[in-house]
Image (cartoon, rainbow, N blue to C red; front, side, top):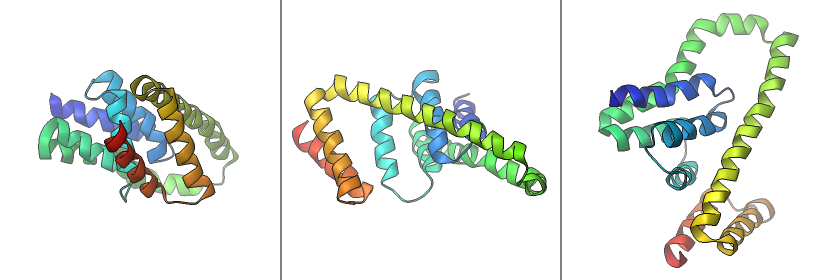
Amino acid sequence: MKYWHIFLAFFIPGILGYGGGPASIPLVENEVVSRYGWMTVQEFSEMLALANSLPGPIATKLAGYIGYSEGGIFGSVIGVFAAVAPSLVIMILLLGFLHKYKDSPKVKRLTLYVRPVIAILLGVMAWRFFQESYEGIGLWQMLLITISSFLLIERMRVHPAFVIGITLLYGALFL
């Protein structure tokens, strides 16, 4: 049953996560934190930050890590397979159909309707992360890390992987 839950935790977000990894992150977070209780919001946010610093698709990194932590190597294999299976099936079965109707106004309109929903889901997830940070480390620490991360990434053009490393080091030393 554990392996079935691992499969569902990544297969469902893979089906519903239109737009790739960033769109499926809130869905994975819902499955892992709310539905199955494998992690807290804080643990998920830390794992997400670390996964973002590594190369490769985010959904498979999340699936591999969470699958391994819940079911060992076999759980990791199931998680990664479940994360890529929806895309694989859709590519095989619907490639001709999608190619035929890719310029359809209805398909373009559907894409326009889905994007705001993804943005809202990402915003809700970010808000939860901020709430957890506020409760865990306090307002001033959270603001210091948030503002300095923003300035490093947006103004000084430091790569996000280095910013994540700096914040991990800061957390290890001062929090």
